[in-house]
Length: 122
Image (tube, rainbow, N blue to C red; front, side, top):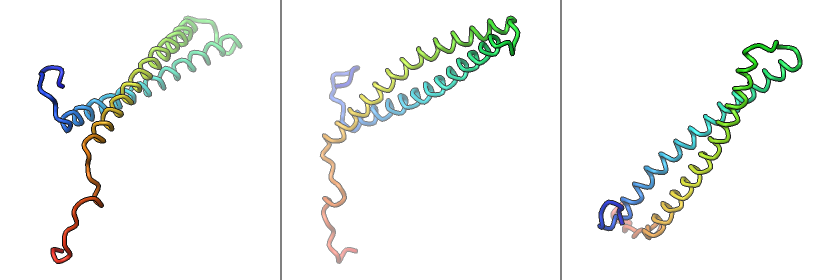
């Protein structure tokens, strides 16, 4: 059933709708991967700057507060992004399973199951 009407939705329409949703979720997962990479770069950069400051290679200047902010911001972004990515991946897997189930229910024939044309028609 469609959420907006009481008319049963055709399996082909449901599959089309699910494929659109799967593409959207796959794009969201890819964005999460990119954000995760950015969070790791920020986190590592902040940590390296802090270590350089502790070891005396960099002076303790306002830039150190930036390094601390980068570490904390990277941790928060990474944690939030990881949670979002897990939820999005779960939704993607559910949508793919639903699509597979709908396709399996269609009873499609394979090419080898198709009726054979007589040789004289070739």
